[in-house]
Length: 326
Image (cartoon, rainbow, N blue to C red; front, side, top):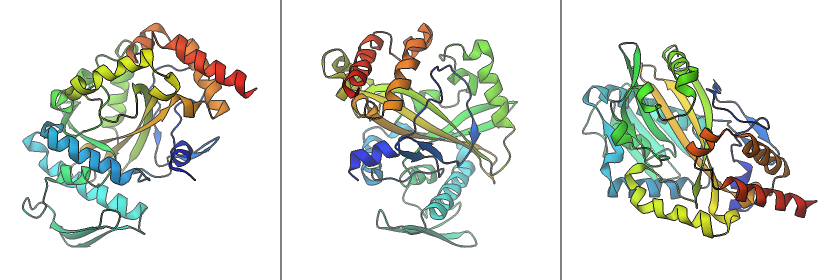
């Protein structure tokens, strides 16, 4: 199987029908989902063939812009909790290459994929080469946000986010859940955001749920944060002039929500997957379904996802491929 075929087989297709509307679409995790070309969702943390390349890219982003990792002082205990949970989850999911040995609060983390052996003591700031949340982000492909629950609300009080989609962790630090989601069309008016927040605050320690979100980007670009808009913003012009089948990428986020067992914080994991339009066209069911969704998307959602001007051209590609396949 080639790298492109492997990426296609693991792609988390976001649609279950021929129409799309915003919803919480939350389900327990992990849960394997079959697709016409493979499957996804069998584990919470997903390590794939792009593991080393994406972690190298994350390290480069953080070196250029350390503000992608931010945390308020009261969240340090939660960051240690997140690290312990994440390393245990990796070791349980990939025992052939990763392990975590614990003797009391002393741990030894082994990551065969990275050639790393790291001994450390939980809570000891000097026993790790990086702060705990940033160390976790150096071991997983997911971005991480930690939500603190207080005064009947959730607040984004810590995070290490290098692959954001048109938002900024540094800007959002300390914001409430509802403030962060203010730009999303319909959701606040329809009550989806308040309902989602209430659901999250009822999560019990150790519970894990997930949802999937989709948007688009120009090219295979993971870092589309507001912080780097000056770098990637001009690339969107290629959508108007270049081969749309190659340049247009569906950008899907598998988002996991975990109530951490010790601190009670909620860990929000965001794993980003990219697939060019031409690859979508290779799967007849996806090609037909994406066309049906685009035809019925409300104008405000089209605008929010940046697809208003692109919709006719995307549909033309999908329909041309359909005719050619017939």
